[in-house]
Image (tube, rainbow, N blue to C red; front, side, top):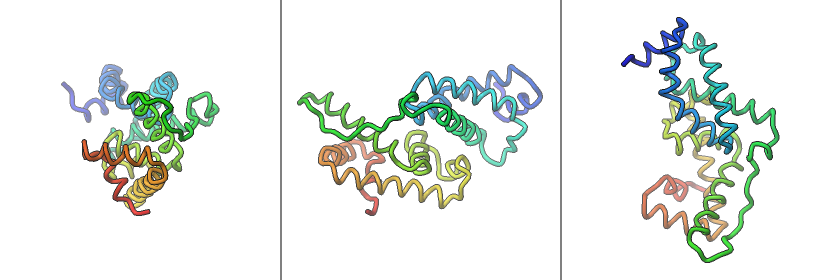
Length: 201
């Protein structure tokens, strides 16, 4: 199996088999990133296809100063932004759900409602804060990788993430349902929600 550096060099030289291998290696990851930001499967698939075409055409711009994964993520996110500019928020399914309590006693309904609340609050964050949070939490990237993707200093990437946590905690503290769920979930799994609880208001 060829190493990633060999695949990249092969793509630079026009080797389509190496490009196919690179796509196969990162396609699912790229789709996850696009879907997290667009919340629409079909739109995310279109973005990924377009992003890989850009990668093939602009591979010479990748200088290796950051990881290929970071560079690819940046291409995918930029393509997502272009997609959003071309279509309305309603078309892309990016409307922010309104906060509301579950109407029925069923546990599944409550969890669905909480999931909608949480996603709505994340999507309502300022763009840079939302990107930093989602790349850190959902893609498990380091702040170094996030700073490379967002084209910002390390401390700025970390600050955007911290500000996102603070805003989410403020929202959680104002909603009893979210607040109780946050504490319960963190006790069970010691998840990233614990960082929200520790964020200064």
